[in-house]
Image (tube, rainbow, N blue to C red):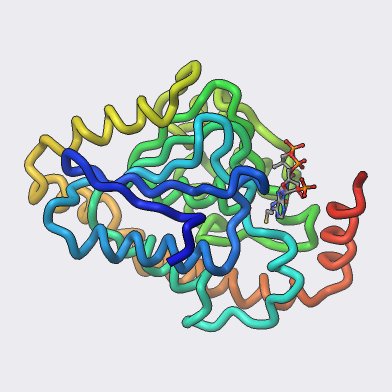
Length: 247
Ligand code: COA
């Protein structure tokens, strides 16, 4: 397992931390594998009642590593990204996220699979897929509208403009905004949830998620089909080149 994704377990909570701060926690293929392994370990371990996904108190996640995108030729069911997304969408225990700084691309869409999200007031969310010559992913073409309403989902996905923690809270993407120490706040909420009866917790999560499950999985695979075609296109290649030559 990569040391860019680490886990600790205490008081019924597994904290899954992204540790690639120098690259704003952009996710590589190895990091997706690390995340999948963490979710599977959390599912298997009885002592884990709740999972908290976090970066640091400054950076959550700048999305998929853009250099990695340039080498990605296919997205089969066995690819690290799709294995992570299918494991995530099927994850049965309560999943929390603590967001600070940038939450870009999958750094925002992963939140649609989280049951509770706390964010620092300075967080910046963004879904820049179209500007990158790409399309929605992680089920966001369906799940974002279900979460925040069609009008806002259209705006965030089609314009790709960044939005604040206050706006994310207003439209129900996240649950709570704090000023600093977001990881500690997320941990406190997770520990509180871990004290509640876990059978009832998981039954409730299943009831909330089940009506959307099959549709969400279909959206993930439909999106992946388009996404991988767009990745090979000139629009995407030019946008990624522009990002790396921006200085
Ligand atoms: N993939 C690869 N590298 C990335 C990255 C990504 N998604 N996001 C950031 N980095 C790297 C930068 O290239 C830079 O590397 P360097 O120090 O070697 O030059 C480093 O992380 C710091 O990023 P920087 O852009 O200097 O930080 P910032 O605070 O000015 O801006 C972001 C932060 C997240 C707003 C900006 O980095 C960004 O827009 N990243 C791309 C996000 C993106 O498009 N993700 C894919 C979505 S599908």
